[in-house]
Length: 173
Image (cartoon, rainbow, N blue to C red; front, top):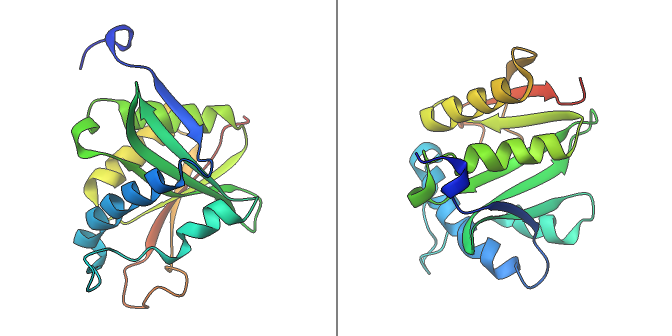
């Protein structure tokens, strides 16, 4: 990977109504990636369901952000408040062409540092790349001041899914 000075700038843009279709298309790639770990299959029309995606555009406490790499749409982040007061990164996606190039790490750290406070990040342990990624991001953000726990996948997900692994950290301290 080259230095960040010769890399395109990474920007997190709030997904306005005009960007919603971009997030919806990228969400198809995200759901396809997760199908390997969660067993999702496309519907008869060839698309993957993502029933809760509209909530990130319709509910003011939730947020959809587009990750841009220069002028390219590089991925997205979905956040929502948790009952205990933390902010959850509900979904995080970077296109395959930009993975392992620091784009996701930069975007994740920019997000965590831009909003000091408690964060909760869920992932599936079977997704080894995501597990390494989030543990590395947590360490880069707060050193060893984070912990991990497992929790059941919330409904309406099938009970047969393996538990989610959660990284809990606070960027205020």
